[in-house]
Image (cartoon, rainbow, N blue to C red; front, side, top):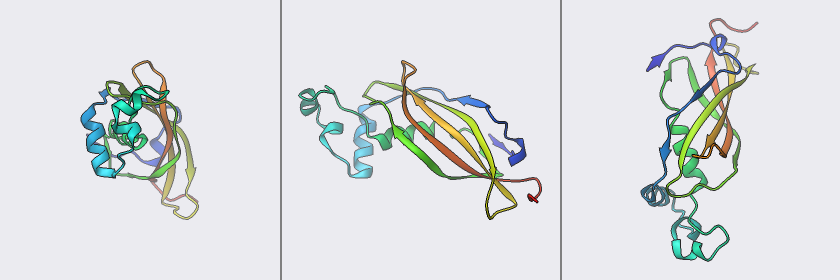
Length: 150
């Protein structure tokens, strides 16, 4: 879906929730191939069985990539991603876990140099099937204003 939502249109506290996505062994293998991260805690089930965690854990960047991808359902012609802040890997994700992403508009502010745009901060809460937060961060958007700030 394509929309046009200006800075002024964002409502603090508004939320959206993605569909779920189950993490698979294929996800682990493909992500390791893309990143070169073949550390045993992601790839070696036998070694992990001897560790406290007991099983392989997903790459944090895998969880981030899939979790953010779950939110990519709307194209706003008036906004672009400006980056991510405060990224934290809170709980491990394992093969067979299903993640869902909840986003909430948390802040709107002027851009210090771009008067024709503002910055919208969206909190990102990626949860597992038990509704436990596994990853959290803030997504910043650079959004066009209807008219430049004074």
